[in-house]
Image (cartoon, rainbow, N blue to C red; front, side):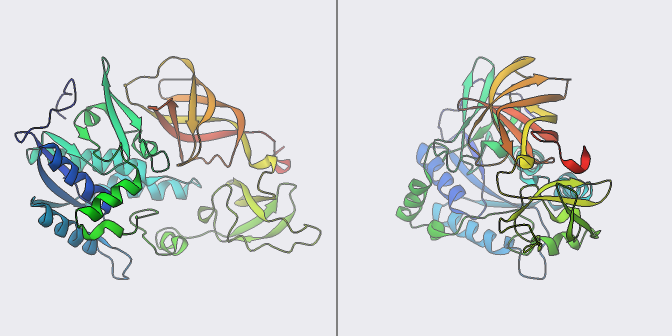
Length: 380
């Protein structure tokens, strides 16, 4: 990858920005903003998943939406497939993690490996000086290089998913809507007569779409049914396979109406992989769902290194979670312990803990294990 520029680009028609066009409103408005600022702009639509036959994949329709927007804006649209890279670098990891009983977040890997990896390099080969996306985030510069900042619209901020993008990529990246709120973006799209101004935001995992998640996963990994037990060790029912459940989950347990159990709903508290047992408890805020600390691995730092061997931070263990005060202690070159001031609910191995200093994203890592606030009776 090319070396980092020392500062943001000055808008000029001699500066080519290639923007990733998804067919959605955010990237469409981002492209229009770049044109308004005076850049030379081209679009790039990437396909990461082969078309399926059950109607859940929206890639073809999204490409047509992106094409209509680019034609209206008067810019060319390139198209490229990174399906092979996606299966190798993202989807295989997704399956491996579920097979190991963890709950991965493929969006983080997709950003690092595909959007700001394979696709980013493709844009540079097409001649891009800079690459842009419709992400809600910002980049600022100081003496150490680019910093990743939260979006001004905190309800839409996507820095959580971008924390593993290397600084060399961020230095050549523009986020044209990172300083806008979502309603401003939609109003801009409407004023520009973009047909996608009221298009529904995409949600969930891109390659699954709106299809039932359990059915999709079962097509790749065979389920291994086992017992469902309470934290006290009482058998309550049978699960379909540990991979179909995540910590804190309430829906789909099918164990309501237990004799003497009361009317409170049941939640997944733990997965006992050795015994293939799903451990559950009643009450959303039961102590068995709380963790006071976690171990993180496979760390990524925006500046290439942690701020110190021990430092205070704000942390998120899931997207859209409010910042949580915590202490970080480095325990190795690629591991750390994050201890929270207040125990956190449903901290899930396989997901990411992302660290902040105010509005600046420092980096993050994969949650490897947790230190529960309460030891479960069956494991004591």
